[in-house]
Amino acid sequence: MHTFKTLTNDLEKSGLKRDDAILIHSSMKSIGEVEGRADTVLDVLMDYFGKEGLLVFPTLTWSNVNADQPIFDVRNTPSVVGILPQLFRQRPNVWRSLHPTHSVAAYGPEAIPFVEGHERSDTPANSFSPWRKLILAKAKIMFLGAAISHNTFLHGVEEWGDADDDICENVQELYVVDYNGVKRPCFQHRHTGGHSGFYDRLAEHFKYIGAWSECTFGDAHCIILDAPKIARYVISVLAKYPAAFTKKWNETHPTFFQDIYRELTERV
Image (tube, rainbow, N blue to C red; front, side, top):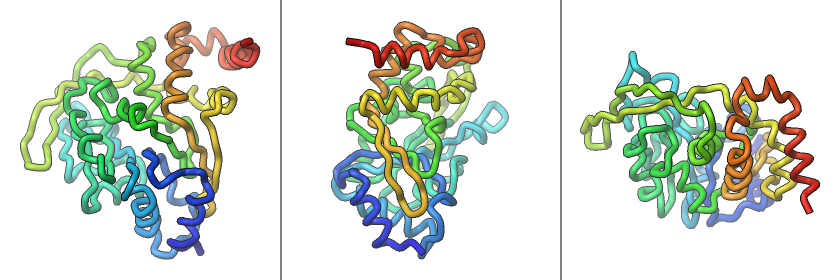
């Protein structure tokens, strides 16, 4: 049975610092039995990062806010990415960004400025978004029992790197309801989908550039990525191969990621 103390010890052994900014993709089930269950997990994370650092969870609503259900209410629209983000967004002093499909929730001294402005994004993760601010915060991305294919940050990197076939041309008229109950239109070019199926092929690349570490948290195996480092690397790949994460490109270039890894390791 894992406890507040043992899980805190796991973080202390992980190499993560209390003043780190961290985004967490999570699987509660992977942690195992915890005294106090999900609430204790959040207590640990908020205590560890919340005083000096910045704790962020994705609170995505891409599957339950759409043309048929176009309203995102920051207080009430549930997240679709697991129990920890769903409970986290409802905690006191946690602030959620105003984006209809790709909101994040944040806790810490800089939480409010971190989430501000997301409603100005006409795509899920453009330069106004908290996803871009992860670079400025020199953030880590922790996959707590989750696979690196669940790396929403890389959707943002594709946007900033002008990746092919990443953003839909058509616009959806969606709406956000803010903390004061004010409803505003938020016109969106949504992601095309399918690109994350190739993100896990970058694992060895991220290890080679020194952007990868591993730890345990309870029973969960965790991967920690350095957000600025992986962003720089992926943008450099997209500059040469803008279609790198598309299905069509990978069908016609089945050894693509092995080939560019070999190029990476052979550089003088």
